[in-house]
Figure: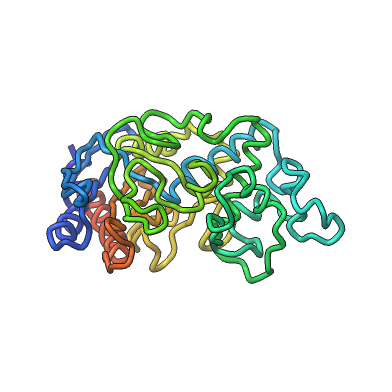
Length: 342
């Protein structure tokens, strides 16, 4: 089966990274539009406080893959259902956004699309967890804070706002949204991969969300909080390849809307990006801080996910993840093309 050969070829630099001790453990999964898939594993799910071998059943903290697998999909689904319009302001769902500065607040003019495409003036991140430990109060803080204006950047705050909008529109938490087998918010139902030893919480994060702000906001937020197995992520990717998750119109938004580098929620392929230079222009992808990533090449009908615990036991070390990701992508695509043309 060619996906087996492709997965094996792509896994070579991953195996080397684990054997050299740069990352404790990793899983690489490859799937094609026909549903054929392959997975390779190496290393440890945890090395402290006790060593634990990584298995296919382990749940990874997906970090910012939450933005695309969950939040982006939820927003586009609600748009498809007519419950929001992408180019309307967030205040359609969150009328109390900056409610004490109705006349002049720029936040009240932000649209759903602005946040999806990270073209707002909001900061990349803010230590929200340092302002208290009540999730409801912290959500109110996000909504009422006067954010300092700056040039557009990739922003967690954009997606925290989108998560709040989803909760307002549906009347339910993000964790209530059905995400598919092997995916979910909150503590995973199976064995979990360890992430970082957190000095704030005083323990290794394992089965608890690594992101401090998502943790403080109750564990499920628009920017982080999802867990998933390698097969769960592959299942999502396969459904995306087949057009089973979003309507044709919404898939057009994902594949073509936006600018040279970014579309609705996702990054699109560009020279030097994290997915490698061999993938087609019809490729979207995203990464997560904990060491996760997902790439979908629609032209080839191929997707791959690299899941690792590169922050375990600390983020303050050079894991080599920024060079590993494109190396894997280039090997996956090269092997796929070789298998296709042989």
